Amino acid sequence: MAAEQDPEARAAARPLLTDLYQATMALGYWRAGRARDAAEFELFFRRCPFGGAFALAAGLRDCVRFLRAFRLRDAGSPPSARRAPHARQKPPPMADVQFLASVLPPDTDPAFFEHLRALDCSEVTVRALPEGSLAFPGVPLLQVSGPLLVVQLLETPLLCLVSYASLVATNAARLRLIAGPEKRLLEMGLRRAQGPDGGLTASTYSYLGGFDSSSNVLAGQLRGVPVAGTLAHSFVTSFSGSEVPPDPMLAPAAGEGPGVDLAAKAQVWLEQVCAHLGLGVQEPHPGERAAFVAYALAFPRAFQGLLDTYSVWRSGLPNFLAVALALGELGYRAVGVRLDSGDLLQQAQEIRKVFRAAAAQFQVPWLESVLIVVSNNIDEEALARLAQEGSEVNVIGIGTSVVTCPQQPSLGGVYKLVAVGGQPRMKLTEDPEKQTLPGSKAAFRLLGSDGSPLMDMLQLAEEPVPQAGQELRVWPPGAQEPCTVRPAQVEPLLRLCLQQGQLCEPLPSLAESRALAQLSLSRLSPEHRRLRSPAQYQVVLSERLQALVNSLCAGQSP
Image (cartoon, rainbow, N blue to C red):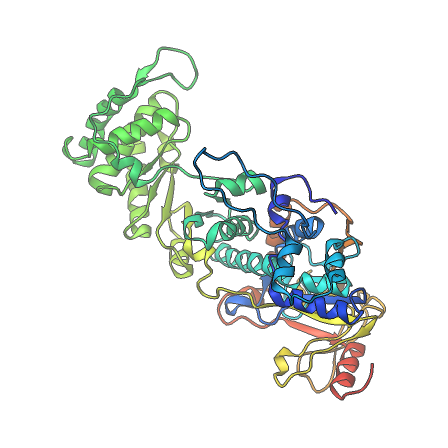
């Protein structure tokens, strides 16, 4: 199958992004004559991350791109870009099949490599939880069926694509729940991320999980994530105050009337601001003021001041007010200030008081509602403090704590064989937690009369679909006997995504998946949604599935 002709598809076309044992097993299957046996795998996790009771399913769009582009290359890389005359030429990387031949036994039958050359995902079918759905332990995020050799090769890349995306989305959802619906959350962790791929994934799926925007420009270009950003301390410190802008004039916002020297206008306002604040006019740093003027000239409709380069109270705040009021006189409105150090909550409250007093003093009501943005190693605990009632913080930038998931750096996703040739397969182990559930399955969410999820139910694919109002006998995990439940609503969970390699329906946009995530979380009960010591959400088995598990554990044939 040809890769989609877009940058993301080309980036996804890396079939050797896998573990070597997938290739060695592929050879083993082929040598045993089983390469084309019909097989089904399930991708799931065993425990919810971060000690919570839920996760968000994510990464499906990346999996679809990967599967549709999957093809082992059998030729050298395309010619490299033109090099400098004396640049040292590097040999092109080995083609995929050639490289596998170099790491597998030298006496491997050449016919095996001919088989690999013809591989694609045209016989692969995928059912999946839609991106943004609530996910719970043991419930498949993906069901992947097709020829045994091919679907085995897909294990590592699919886990790589789904696990981190779901982890980041869940982490972002937790931060959104702490922040509440009103605070705006900005992801700004690219520089702290685990490499470029990790950075792009984190920016994409933190947005899905509930963040409002990202600083990552590539995430905006490739994924449509809203991007945001203003200036750093380096911009402020690069100015001394002696610089003369090549064009210091700024036209009024309405477009009528002569331009005004913004620096001179800000200097006039500075005297009034300092008198209002009880400061000497020499106290605010001139280089900082010059930086603010330069930024305001470039972005008169989106001016934001970074206040803590020198001193928030003696320099940053008066300089910001002087430039903001100069802009205001021309019909523009400054959009915000940012703090990146100190007690962010207390400073925001005090700054808001200054804004209100200055708004009254200078008769500019808009100044009262200027946004206050904060950042500086904000984790869940710090976020809870910034989001408390009475906080004057409007926008919160979070980097390390969202992209690195420091509380739990891995989801622990697994990809397990559940059926071959239509016969169920089950992993039996001394560790009960690592036992798998056999057979091709269907998954349903049982809902109460208010639409909130009660539990998820797994059953064999051939069983009748459960109906709303029907009394169901189900087996909770580890139970010695079944219990009954009568759901008011029943929601099928797994949707047919790819059938024989063909996309069954257009994937939702990232924004649509984000909306689904927020809707799903809003329907989850408070007991399951709380982040500390939540009630554990139940995933139950149908009687027939439980009977199959029991028979296989007893060593009986299905």
